[in-house]
Image (cartoon, rainbow, N blue to C red; front, side):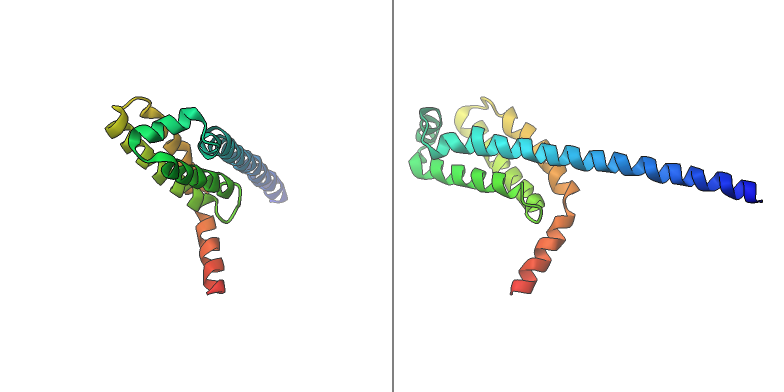
Amino acid sequence: MSETTATSVPSRTVVAESATPRGRRARIALRGLQIVLALFYGIASALPKLIAHPSAAEGFDELGWGSAGMYTIGALELAGAIALLIPVLQSVAAMALSALMVGAFVVTITAFGGENAATPIILIVPLALIAWARRGSNADLLRLVRRRA
């Protein structure tokens, strides 16, 4: 009997050890994705709007939103980029940026005839993954808000 117990224990240990690195790799990959998206939203998307780069300004002028709309969208994108990196805000940030991308898709379809409409839809996919995978942070955020109230 001791031989049977000795053989079954190591096999259970091997299963537990193989599950841990996979979960760790997934968490690292997800964190890397968050960093890449935060860099994209902060540098490639928000920065041109916040510095009123001509490429961003002409699109908002075409819409009739002017500089106020451009700065508002840029500030929202920058806030979302920063929040993607803060553990307690990461899921909410991903959901908020997803909502912003739905708006960008609608505007692109209606005002610009669908040119580059795939970009916001493509960005929603990793944002939805982050929102779902980090959904536990929503409970942490709710606890913090309730404690402060």
